[in-house]
Image (cartoon, rainbow, N blue to C red):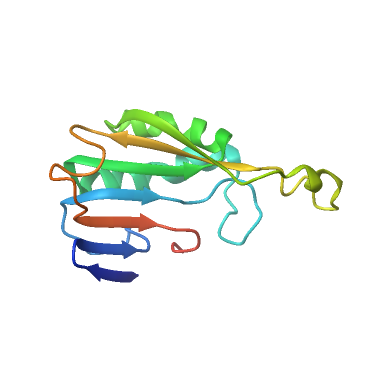
Length: 151
């Protein structure tokens, strides 16, 4: 686990399933597997994403303050499969952010075209109550599950 202490709060990067953390975080950035099989950390099938994310969402839900936000990154299909798990955990969908990675037309002719078909990533923004970030407009404690930070 990596910890970054800033003047506005603390950022933790790692697997919260195994971390000894005190509840009260205001933001979680969840960027786990995408079900694409492109890297060693992404060996969950697209059909298994909801089941893989369920314990992570339950844990982060327990760690976040009542007015916290979750930014859930994935592919379009991955986000669509995880969204019901977020809603079942009491999170309200607020908006979808699309990160356009640029023109990937050249990939259509590459040898690995089937492996690199995504030209965008999607971020579902969720809250349980209150504003998107914090009640005073400043970050407090942030938890980030990033690629490869889980075992």
